[in-house]
Every structure is written in C-alpha cells, then in structure tokens.
Length: 443
Image 1 (cartoon, one colour):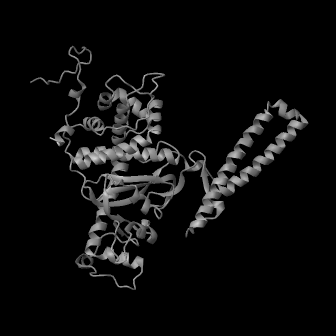
Image 2 (image 1 turned 45 degrees about the horizontal axis):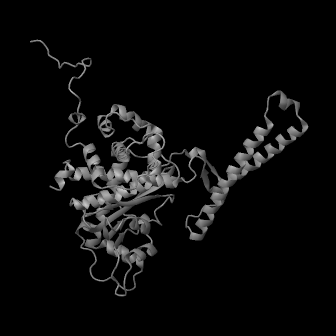
C-alpha cells in the first residue's frame, strides 16, 4: 500500500472570493471583541473631525486591534503592525487590507486614556446586563510590580548627581579657559569648545532638575513620617523614565525600575477587574482608600473589601467603613490582614470556630481587625482574596505575558494599565459566556 499525503497547493490562485470568517472558529475571541465594542456604544474616541490630512483608520477598529493584541500577548507597536500581515484574526479586525503603521498604533494607544476608561466601565456594565456580574458584592485588592520601560542603570542618586555637577562645572571652567587662551592643542584636535560647553551645561541643568525632584520626594516622605525614611543622598532619579521608581522585584531579593499596579477584583464569581490604577509608591500602605474608590458605583456597590497586610491602615479602614455611633459600618466592611500569616493551616486551626460576639471594649483597632479575621466570616472573606486578585495578576503576567510597560511616565503608564484591564476583562467575559456569540446572550 502506497503512502498518501494531503496535497498542499500554494501556487493555484483561489477562484472563489475568500471569506476570512471561514478561517476562524465560530467561538473565536475576535468576534466577541468586535461585537462587544459595537454593543457598548463608545463616544470617547480622539479623532480628527476636520477631515484634514490622510484618511483615518476607524477608531472602533483601532480599539479592537489593541484589545485583541494585548489579550493575546502582543504589546509592542511594531509587533502589532507585523501581525496585521501574518495573523488571521488581526487581519480580520483590519478588514484584510488595512495595516496601521506602528507610529499610528502607538499614538492611538498613548492618546486615548479616556476611551479605555470608558470602555472599561461599559464592558463591566454589559457583563452585569448579561448576568455575569452582580450589582452588589465584594472586592479583593492587591498591588503588583511591573517593570518600567527604563533600565535601573540609567538612574543616578542625589549624592552622585551632586558630584557629577561639580565635575561638569570644573570641566566648563577649563573649556572656557582654553577658549580664552586660544589653546593650540585644542584647535589641533578639532575640539569644538562652544559645543562641548553647551553639552555640559545641558547635562548640568538636567541633573539639577533631577536633584530638585529628589528633594521634593524627600520632603514629602518626611512630612508623612515614613518609618523607612531614607537619607536624601540615597534618593534616585531615572533619566529614561523619571516617574518610575526602584522597587523590590520577584521574591524581594533584587530591585528593578518599576511601577506598582493596583487592581480591585470581583469576589462574587466572575474574577473580573472592577477598578485599578498605577502608583509610584513602592508599597501599598497608602492605596487602600484609592483602590476602593477606583471602583465605579455604576459597576459595583461594594459591600466587603479584602486586602493583605501591606494595605493595613487604621485611618483608611475607618474612612472606608464609616462606622456609626453603634459601631455598625455604613460603608463597605473591610477584612485586612494585620500581619503576615504562615502558609497553610494546622488541623487544630481548621477545627477552630473562631471568636463570637462583640469584641471586648479594651481592644485597639488592630486587635479588633485580627479578631474579625479569625471569625468564620472573616476567614471566608479573606480566603476570597487569594482565590481572586492574586490569580488575576498571575494571568496578566504569565498567560497574557504582560510584565513590562511599553509607555513611559506615570500618566501614560496609567493609560496602558487601563488598556491591560480592558483586555483582561474582554478575555475573561468571553470565557464566562462560554465563547458563544454576543447576540445569543440576550436571546
């Protein structure tokens, strides 16, 4: 019996017109993204209404292109541009013929923070209309470090910046002296003295601005009474991305130039991201109120908040819970660890029923929180944090592959984090509905 192979014919032209939908499964993510963007009726696009210049790419197409690219692990504008030629799903988004240049992709991403925030809110409202997100419920919050688009080797300390400024001043003095003396050696070597002086003065001004920024950071830390107050000489400034900060990374044994991304995640079953932002703060101590406030009331009426010990702040918890004279919380009930716990629980700990009744009046706020977490209700609520927000960061980093911001500066980085949250939610909601068409969800 002779061996038979499938005939692979790359030469014969196709006679029947191609329908790219035949090349993708019916339950493909790309259909959901395109249909959902049409359904949620967006208005925040930045477009040229004057009609001058070259033809513009439809903003809905550009949004779908970025959302699908980020959801499938493509973040660089050049990588996305290349995929418009090679990836069937992305070619379908672009109609088979459009190939936005990487500069167009980068500009759209950079300039549309309001659009991404609007999309973020409206896709969550759509999720609630589809019965996949409850109006009232809990959230779990956490922060995770993501690399900045900058090398830590491009950073300079306050002390070293001062030393370099003095060195530059001495070099400028020497160059001025050479110019005044019309130094023959300088002329013979082709040294352009005015240009060299300008280079050093420009660098000196940049270092002076960096030192001024570090002085502001130092004064702010002093006013806040930071327990881990650093000496002014130890503060650093990065010249590639001055808004990024040196932060502990991975297991905490090394440092990276980073940002701290915050997320608030639904604990009622969907694991959708309901809020978030990016901060320059290396720890989460000041973030609890802000991350809870980042959840739009249109999306979720928050009744419980779970957070790890890094978020613990008596003032923040008091402001969030807003307890009345009877001690009842008028705001969300907070379940925040007060100290790091060990992994796993012993059999005795599993059998413990936990404290019951009202806490003793002589307890301070930290002791009351520890007691609340030891109750059956407290254990249940805090357990949700490990089952929701921690896996979400794991999915973003390991499944989507996003570990470093492409944009620079705190404002632009927040824009990109909005896009990441949007892309994650599109992908998650698509899974929640089982990959069926959006129209079938309302049938």
